[in-house]
Length: 120
Image (cartoon, rainbow, N blue to C red; front, side):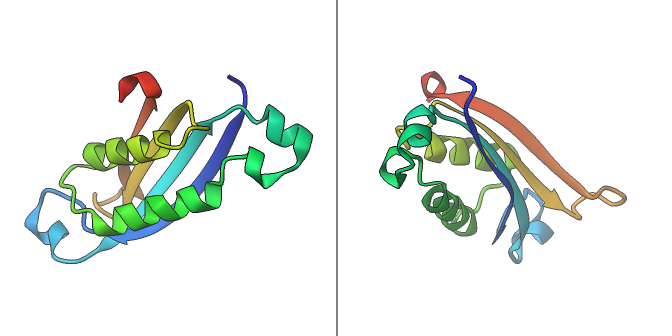
């Protein structure tokens, strides 16, 4: 599938981390999504009903992230992948979750995963 929707540098604030000091207050979490979809119909009709509502999906991801309390970045990324794949239009998703400033001398640390419908 060659069609992709990209959501870059989506920022949420949530509790994430295994260390007690990381769990005391929300921190910035940066999320990038690459959503494999079939955009042929939407491209032909120019009608929102034929397209993935990526604004609504982004809001769901932010809301979930801000309410969750995962210890591992991998767990948060996996949960976000499942949330994305619940949208019928999404066939495959690549999720990158990063937390800025967690490791000294590194801009951020994170994980990137790819999931398909068959994975869930």
